[in-house]
Length: 302
Image (cartoon, rainbow, N blue to C red; front, side):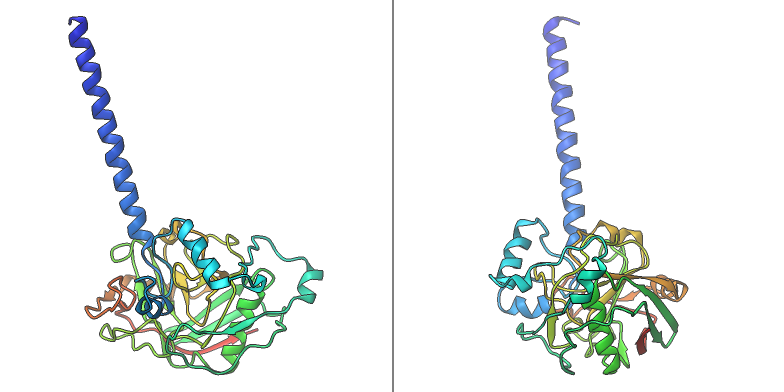
């Protein structure tokens, strides 16, 4: 092979490697976009009407960091009380004893079942949450020391019977969303695969993020749902990770505990498949209901 032919061959091989790398980068970018454009509940939908973002109220959206920072600034403004509480490790006991929680009226316009505001002083002795469903009990070990205000909100809503007879409205799987989780907490959801507004309902108040990065979103993790770009807009909606696929998500959603009993129930729901809702107003699968209905009968914290 002449020197000129050898140079031509090396040039072709170089171009082929560049093309392969470009293709791999594009595939990875597409996969990330598909997976990150996923979770939201209702707040995002309502805000969309105001021109923000087309995702339901759990996770999702163009999660490139910059947009989330801008959104955080819009949500929080100059008020230091609205700064995300990044607490990957337990808050020292002395600080916990002095801690108070702040809850604000939800001004997004999303439909709400308002039963009042939680108390400012959280009960730090709560360790477990039991969700009684039509299929059996799901028990969650809480990280009260890391997410005290989230646990406090659940305790308040539970005492008000907020969750009673509500339906888990969204089943996300790797096939329909690139993730695996069951989403609940919308007091107005019908979870029938027909209602276009499933995932928009809330408690009528919001509060700040906590414990970001404190738990991976692997199978069994329980976290709060909010729109992708709506930092510090937590409400009543929550999700339970049903697959390690969910761990791909950025640590933008408040984790508050881990399922210790009842994963067998959730696994059956997961394997049962979903009802695709052709009327989903966001088009992101936010109201794809589980085929096996999950109805919350009672929630209690101890």
